[in-house]
Image 1 (cartoon, rainbow, N blue to C red):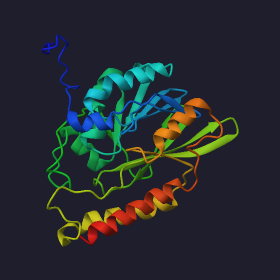
Image 2 (image 1 turned 180 degrees about the vertical axis):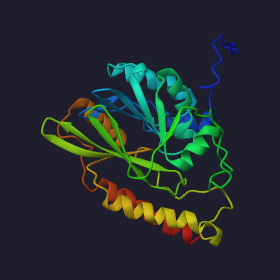
Image 3 (image 1 turned 30 degrees about the vertical axis):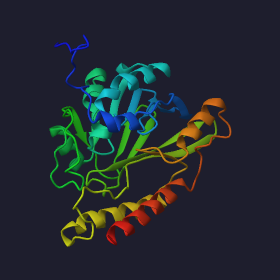
Image 4 (image 1 turned 45 degrees about the vertical axis):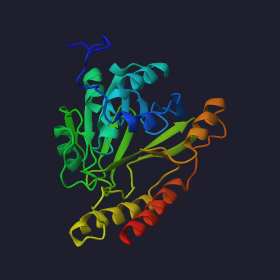
Length: 281
């Protein structure tokens, strides 16, 4: 393995991407048990979730490549090993959420699961020319060991079932994931939601008739998110107040500050407002 100028091994799967943006996304945040067998092992600006099952671990998203070491250390801090991860679920094929997946999959030997459109982009490490943000997006290490999940498909690992919920718009391959978590008799439905933010590179307009596919996808996903069973939300980028909720949860487990049966509906309503604003530009 080649060495960097700092004398550290040069790992092509963890070379930094967009270091200036990553400084904001990778704001320090302690690993914490969210509810039951669900943990947060991500950062102040990028969520990464871990689910413990009777047959191993499920990881959701992988942040940027340079975050992999921290994610693996946080998994260890929760009492587990990266080698216990059997499945990695992907929300969207953008470098900020999928950039670290190739290294995490290598270190764990896990199978990566994504939607069909996302899998095609993950394999080539980004570069989708039709993405609204294409002009801004960085390439990232391609993912090889992939399995495609259909909308509504249930992914079972041991005693845990995660349901794939297609929520395209931000990318046409965006997938959210839903599962049930129990602490004794207190059972909650948790949703790890892909972004519903209608953001695009300069010059790319949602109001352009050529882009009606993205607008229709957003509207469908927003409508779906409004009525999705949901007691707790993990958004791919943390929501306002999440850092305070993580700190509160680290101090005391009850009442759980993330329990909020209306949170997914409000997440969808904010996206609806943002889309209307984009269409008016």
